[in-house]
Image 1 (cartoon, one colour):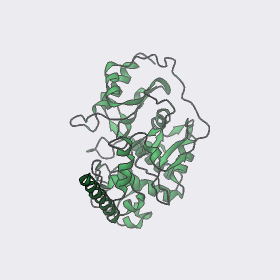
Image 2: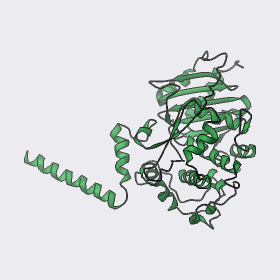
Image 3: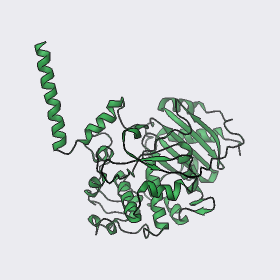
Image 4: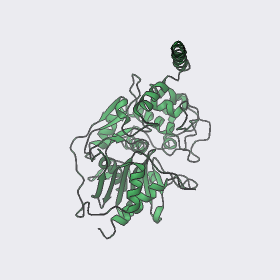
Length: 382
């Protein structure tokens, strides 16, 4: 018994020293990460984690329900889709054909109104906010320099368009495994702005795509500063309300007194409402005959900015699977809004995991399965 007490004494002392060291070195956010992730039985961020953070409400007003296709839910899922959904924990799979829901399925306790984390699909939405700020005259153009808003970046040549197109040149480390990475700090720390404004431009901006969550976080900060409006409110006024979203949504905030939205991630909403951004961009920025986004901004967003990096535009991933021009909102756990304009089709998948990357491609194998299944399931349905 004496040895056990001695062990416990030294173990507690060790924990106290570790915690003290984390606070002294400004890594105390790791404690929150441990509490939120491991303390809830997970090993990484998860789709229901918004309840462990502060959130701002993104208000809707008059919901405009999606019409249901005449063949609603008559399609039979393919065997490959069933296997993929079971293996990766799909909780929502939705197909919209000709602007009507033709198929939807929800798993476990999730439903059409369940709010789950968008993760990096929020990058596309943040880029849409940039388009709205340009349309409203708060930002001049994609070519306006970030230094106009944050003098720390004056003379860098970095533009708001560089932030949206993932070509900022910032020294951000896009690491998802190390608890000491800037990505982990941004997710769990209490002051995102401090982290972002400490970054430097170390490569020439506007030359090619380097995917950095810090770019989108800085873009959100620019939009908020330019519009003088909290981002959740700006999103509500410019998109959530005019697009008739079914539900209010939530946007995770840091814990700082300024309550800054995590613009590189973390909008909690449902599959049907996420899908509306696919329709908005498919229709050139028009919703119910109202031009919510400039048509030229939309066209640029879903077209490669750099010929050598054909997989990314401004805020959207791009694919030519099945020889189609496809644009995609994408989150790290396999959250997708996949839009195929030439066939007037939108596919949404939400879930717990994504598959392995296909060799030589920027997408995982399940991404292609979601598309192939949608085509097979809607064949001969107009």
